Length: 102
Image (tube, helix red, strand yellow):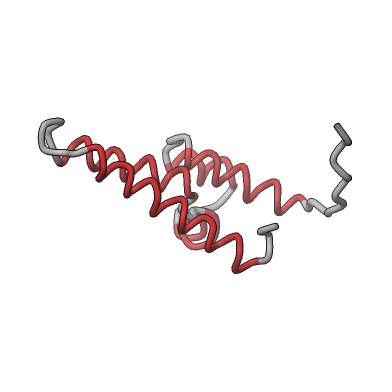
């Protein structure tokens, strides 16, 4: 097996900060705590710039909604599968729109 070619790219401190704050929100760190860690005076900057909804968070929140809104006997497996396909489809469309798809 041939090793994958190296891909050169630049990572700035802003990229690391943006990723860290997004990951904190994805893993449930309270907004107030993230605001403090980021050194902001209020949450508006976090909510406007850093708090994008990642595909993982979108899928997780949708699954929580299904779990809470319906009893297990009311939800058919196909609804969960359809939801997963929608999230995956949205992710693929985003990748293609910014040129990351191969």
